[in-house]
Image (spheres, rainbow, N blue to C red):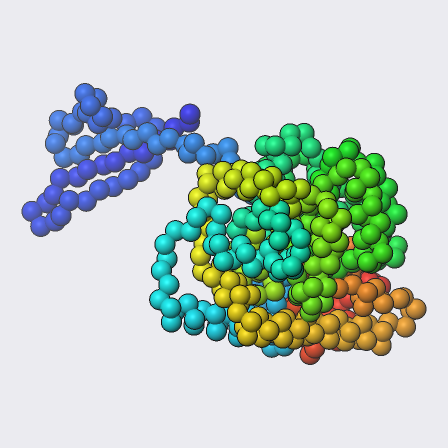
Length: 457
């Protein structure tokens, strides 16, 4: 390992001075370690050489910035007053401020009034949370709930829940492949890569229509090795905002059953996409009603605004209560060395909101308001583009998309123009978060999209 040499010169004190030390670089000086220490005859100066080892981490390179979170870092560094952050999927008010739901504040007040402690949770999480989150997903009277066929474990929001499921696949389905939509949420591939689970992509987005490539999707699912895991977005597909129709979901379920695949849902926006908890869970409930075994990861970051609480769950629907109990035991076994047990604060908020009829109804009203605001800016952006663009381009795909994101169809160069010229920060695949857009900024955004679409190739 390479060394660098430093010399240290020690000068004796004068009657009116304190000790002082002088550092300098030396190529060949006297060393003071052990028996090698040498003192000059003059007793006025002593020189010594110290070997400094290069860091053992010298070979570690700088990681690239996260493609989504890095957008916010660049946005914060921009001083232009017109700047817009449409990169990260976090809800904002019409004034573009973070929003804490009123129902969350009430749930937290209840927690303070009860004087609840901060003791460790069990590995599987808060029992009250696990009960209400499964019931919210499937419906309290669903046979999979009544027959205790769902293994539910509290996870670290959607990411942590997906990671637990990936670890279960790696351990108990060795060699099985996960099929992921093209495109998909940026972290999906990272999760399966780190879990050492092989994956490939199925066609999803059709750039020619800015819509769903349904035929390609079905063909790729059919062509996958039997017993593959098919990762599906339960609602409000990220990043495209394009969801299958109810009829298309039936066909997807048919093909997955025929091929003996295992459906794996990522449900990050239940209630936040359409404003209806039941409508946004309809795809999951369709597969469960067919008696299929399936995985579902849940998150409460968006629909309750609990971004920093890291609260979610992994649910595994099994063919029997016995199988569910065994699966749950193994998920707990995987969670223990990962993070031991999950945090309690967010779990209590969810349990209080969903488990209290009054708070639950208030939450549904707030979700409808949030979903409604996003629908409103979606419509206004479409109207602004229509008024600006007289080329005949059809922008109606914006209205057909759902949820907090819109896939604009802009390529990387056009997305770069949005940022460099217009100070609109977005991911390089052309995705924008409408949750970070206000009605007052729709016309400005429409001008930026029009310019980038028509003047940048």
